[in-house]
Length: 586
Picture 1 (tube, rainbow, N blue to C red):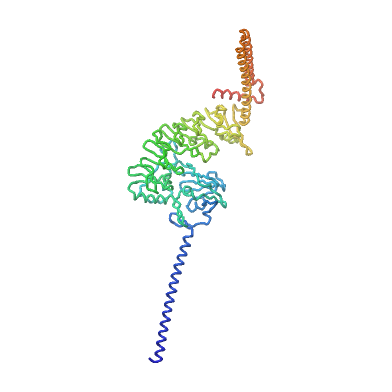
Picture 2 (cartoon, rainbow, N blue to C red):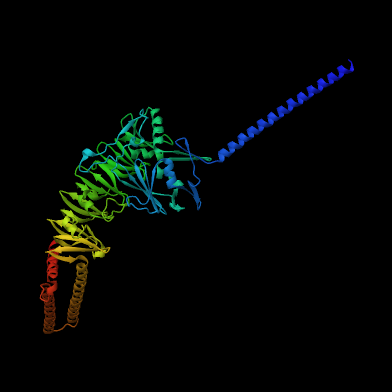
């Protein structure tokens, strides 16, 4: 091999070496690139895993930085932002008060109004039943509960998916684990109570939050039940669908009976022996029906009101006082939570629904007790007559009155007179206006007695410069209610004081007589002395009788108006007539 060939060979070997180095470098760079890519992917994945995300029905939603906050070790969610995320309508202000009070808000769903107040440990929900046109006297309009066959898993309109059985605007009161708060002028609710507030299932997995609304839960449940041969129908009564939030399923079996199944364990918790079941979400209890009875039990099978053939139907009447309206063949009445009768189950109607004239009065009803008058009294209706009970079961007014309240006529309104149902304490009496035979009277709700029998032609109010005064009309004489009852109370006080003084005087005379008799016996006085003492005692008794007679004669003369003031003659005559009728009526 000559020198030239040797150089060519060396050059060729050198080139091969360079190629190997280049390939090796490329491989190294590729490995580094791949490692870097995997590292970047891993970094992005870690970053993604640490980034909070929220999903509604498996669909990712935008997450605001102010949706959730931490305060004093508790987690809260913005009521407004969370409502918007769920597709609900958020309204500032207090429900039915038509104001913009920043301490209140209410949220409108397809089936409920959720009323929230800041710094409160409870909230209210009002059921929306747009199809509820029923009158309790007309069973033909009752909204019946329907069921959905398990193979019916499609619905084009979620707003028509469920049937609301309860009356429109039925209120439910919910207790919260922590008070709601106000933060940056927005109301926040506790995350721990988010499920029962918004009727959702809420689950956190790492940085991901999963939310399932009621429609999604219902469709998922239908698919689950479809694969279980034991169950044939799922209730689409809205009240019963709410049980899904608490992992409870109300379902019908192949024996055509309803029961309750735990979705967590699959076990039956309420036996399949009932013809119907209705869930009470805020209490986690059930109205249970058989062919001829109804009762109330909780999810632990504990009986609250025993099923009895005496009642055909039970509904919640008042949440605060835990009262239930019962229906029997005889009519309607009220039970307490022990099943005791508060109002006999025999009236045509009970509650403010039975008071057809109520809409004529500008009277606010406590939202906590919408079926009660003054949050305490239950109006009953029977045979075209009204009566009154209190929540303890005491009959306040017999069912003998044609109506309650005075309804101002058009002529009255032209003169500035307004209708009156209740007299406030500022008027001198906490009273209710009673009506019989087209005449009006006043009943004292505190003293539980008739103060003015039905002898008035009108009882009305007049508001001037923001001040409201109440008047009653007797024999064309207008009498200020406040002035009259102020005089009435003073007269009663004076009369009671005179009677007390008279009783004390009589008691002293009796005491003297008793001492005289004891002294006579202890000293073994002569018969003549005893007779003399007895005569003296008799003389004292005559004086007492004479004194009493003088008192009543004087009282009678005053009542008969011998010393009357001519200017006030009509009012005094009215008082005399009223006092006479009070004695007769009472």
